[in-house]
Image (tube, rainbow, N blue to C red):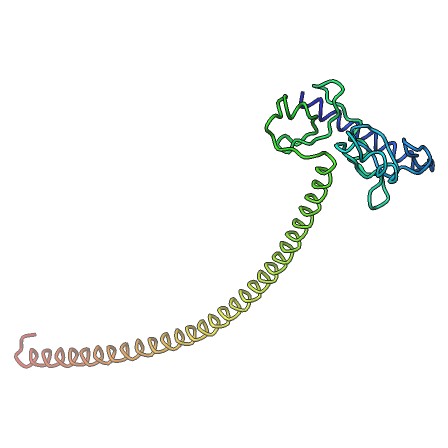
Length: 241
């Protein structure tokens, strides 16, 4: 049943919108009051599904049982046909034959008739007049759009700040890398100089030690030769050879 109601409501909205477009394009004459049939209609009675002028509303449609009827603007403040009001009286309930869907179930978010609220599956649900629900819905939607517009602006501002912070972090990182590379280059130069100095000192010490060892070798060889000469002469003197 719920799907049929929604489809019916959507169908009536489309039909009403087409009628408004056609009237606008063809320059159709304004509706006349259904009571006096003389003055332009400015209001619509939901229960009667008829239009009336402001004077007839005050003089005829505000007395007796008419007092309980729901009267809505035929034309909105912007000069356009009031969307929800224009087709509300034509919406008939598919569950309760002939009953107009003059109410809007806030729990199920769909148009319903009075019988749906009293006897049907929407009994006990929160409800509102469909014309008022339309106005409330537009106001809620406008507030929602404004709120999300603000959130979008705030998000864009935050993203801009984050991008700026990201660029600053990148600049600082580049500067830090430059400092590190510069200090490492200096340190590398010092290490290379120190390495050269140590290698040179090591070479000098090596040469010095070799010289000292060579001198010792030369002395020992001289002693050895001297000793060998003495031994040889001694043997000759003793006639051992």
